[in-house]
Amino acid sequence: MGHRFEIYTTPENAARIIDIAAGFNLDARVVGHCEEHSGKKVTIKSEFGVFEY
Image (cartoon, rainbow, N blue to C red; front, top):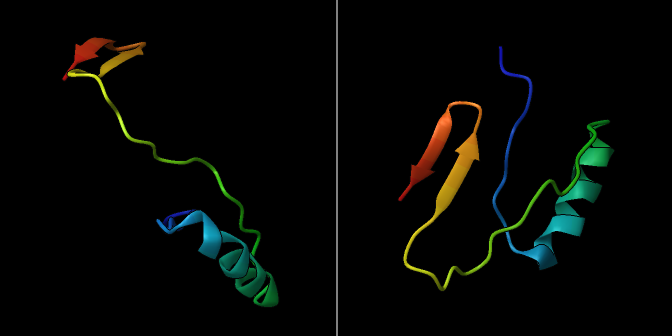
């Protein structure tokens, strides 16, 4: 009963995957990216508080 499906891939493969999805009448798009973090902690600020990892 989910409403989406995520695939984690390289930027080079994303366009091909989007084309394949279109062939099945599915709307697909890139929604984000990952990048290397050089710091020692990550801070997440949300409506639930501030979390540091």
